[in-house]
Length: 408
Ligand code: BGC
Image: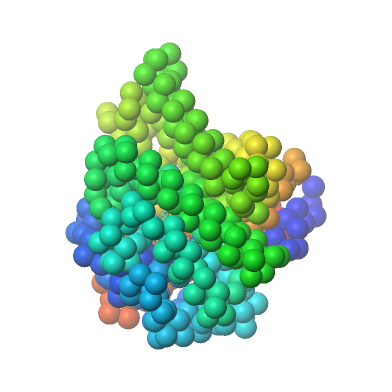
C-alpha cells in the first residue's frame, strides 16, 4: 500500500507533564531529589520557554500537544480561588497552541499533589475526590477549554510508586491498604471530573491515560513468575481499566489514553528491566531490544489496542510512547517500529485516533531524574539558556505526520 494510512484528522503530538518540564515547582515534588541527584527545577524551564517549544511543535508538523495544568501552581489551598497569575500563563500557553493550529490535550492530575493536599494525606484524604472536582470546576469557570481532557495519568503506576515501592512522594513501601484507598479516591475523582467536563461541553472527549506494559513470566515454566505476571495483567491492566471506564453500568470515559511502554519481564516478584538493574545482565546478554529503562515490544501494540477496544468499546489515543536513550539511532529505530505498529493496527481496522511521543523535550524522569533522555528535543541542562536541539527521531516523526504514512 502506498497511500495515506493515517486519517487526516489523526492527532499527531508530543506529551509532557508540568512537574517534569516546567521548572519553579510549586507542588510536593519541589524538594524531591532523584537518584542521580537532580531536582525538577534544574530542568528545561518550559514554563518560561513555552513559546519556543510550541514553535518546535509546528516545525515538527504536530497538530496536537498533551500538556498538564499543575494543580499546585493553580490552587494554593482547599477550595481556594485559582491563582490569577498562573491561570493567565496557562491561558497564554493554550492560546499560543491554538493560534498555531495545535490542539491541546489537557491532563489534570499527573503524579503531583499540591503541598496542602499532600499535608492532608494526598489521595488518601477522604475529601480528595471533591477537592479535585472543585479544582476542575474552577478551571471550567475560568474559561479553560479543550476538546480532549485526561483526568488522571496512570493511576495504577502512581499508587504503586507512592505506596508500594516508595519511589514517589509520600514514599511509602508495601502499604497495600493505602494504595487501594488512594486508587478508590482517584476513581471517584475521575468520575466527578468526567461529569463536570461533560456537563460543561458534551462533545468534549474525556478519558484517562493508562499505562500498558506486556507482563510476561521470565521463566515460562515457573509458577511464581506466572503468578506475578497474571496478577499484573489482571489487576493492572483489566481491573483498573474497567474501574475508570464504567461505573454502575454507565460509561465514564470517552476514550482510552494508552501510555505504551513495552514489556515487563517478571522473575518471582522482581521486574527484570534495565531500570531495575537487570539482574545478571540477562537482557543485554540475550540481545533483547531495550532502551535505558525497559525492554521494548512494538509488535505487541496492535494486539494490545485491539484487546482494549474489544473490552471497552472505546477509541484509543496513544497518549505516550517514547524512549530513554542517549543513542539516537536506537531512538529513531524504536520510534519507527512503533509507528509501523500503529499503522499495522489501523490497517487491521482498530480505532486509534492519535499518537503522542513522550516527551517533547528532555524531562525530569521522576525518581530517575534528568539523566534519562526522552526528548524529541534534547536540552543542555548545564547551560543557563537551556538550548534545545532537534533529534533525528523528531525529523522522522514530522515526516510521518506530514505524509500520513510510515514508509520503509
Ligand atoms: C509517565 C511519564 C513518564 C514516562 C516515562 C509514564 O509512565 O506518565 O510521566 O515520564 O512514563 O517513564
